[in-house]
Length: 184
Image 1 (cartoon, rainbow, N blue to C red):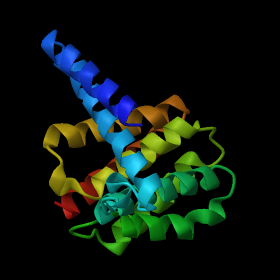
Image 2 (cartoon, one colour):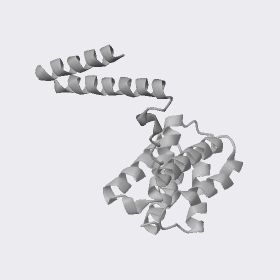
Image 3 (cartoon, rainbow, N blue to C red):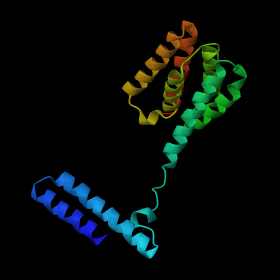
Image 4 (cartoon, rainbow, N blue to C red):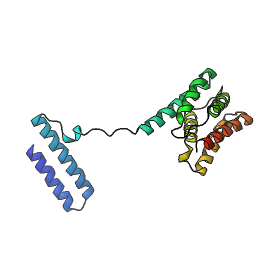
């Protein structure tokens, strides 16, 4: 094993001398991994890299991703079963990380969204985009006015693409605009 390590180190020196430090770094890291693996086999200890704990996940990011997935599932369920609206109200309530919109605003958005997507065949990608847009509006303190307008336009386009009645699509956009003001 010492021969392998010596060979790798000589390769490292040769590569470094030729000016290719990117490759040299790779060779060095490979040599160090092999050394650690050999030491672990001989002593029964785990390699140093394997004992380092994984970084803790960001709880806000985790909650955001879970909420978006829940909203997407709610939208998928609403397309065929309007009775799924109570779960949508619950997930909309959980979407805001800062200032919370009123229960009336949340309920109105849920009603209008349920009516807008009922019987429509939104693709999974469209459901995800709609869920992301709605979640983002519930956290407008992180959005510029331009970003907010982009979200309003996206929601309008998704609903128009599926021939949602223009008055209903306008109500959904008005609902999210109201929530944007309430959560600023």
